[in-house]
Length: 323
Image (cartoon, helix red, strand yellow):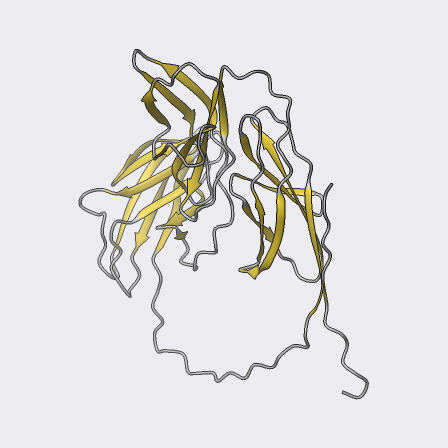
């Protein structure tokens, strides 16, 4: 049965913080930026350019720009950089002659697209392209899809379709249900191993981003019977304090007869995240009640009973009369 923990946090009266305003420096340092300009548009296509500038405080070695293009738009030709694509996600690094920029220097690269969409979610070396400080990364990647296994003479190869992430996927962890640690971590979308012995087993692959957020698993069973058994309920839910606009919720892992694929996290009845970790982030929006539930799911889509925790954040009391 789900548990509900209710806590009322009476916030103390606002503390007064005395600060001394110092004169602004004569010239504040500028941050590195990557600025996009759509140069021309025509029926069915467009051309664009991104200018990368190092800022005036320090050199920018090995710059990396990444972004997504909306559905219906793909890059057909590009120049002055090295570009790789995974689905709708593009990663661009400098060529041998412009990969590193001195302080205050800039370089440009450009492309021609099929479609008229423009870059979305642009990042320069994992920070926003407009030079703002990066926010904490709390969003996990999407789960890999189309996981399949191909036997060869002496090897067995797992392949899958790439995950997506708002900051970029850095790798994939491969697990089997015969152990609790990953059997491999790769940066590609395939992994080959010696052919496993004849036995009933499952494999899971999940994506990882640079902040350590993990997607749910894609699960592949070898000889597994139809799965109608739900995972166990997560236990030991905790809500920890707000950092950078988010609560942190944690729990003890569930178990399953075949493979726990991940966890569904809800806030006040709405699904906010699907994760492969045993932690997740819950957005904080000020005073109010936060009811968080977590339930495990397996590769067959069976869901555990929900575990639940709640907290109420009340405004401070009014000042006493005459205060």
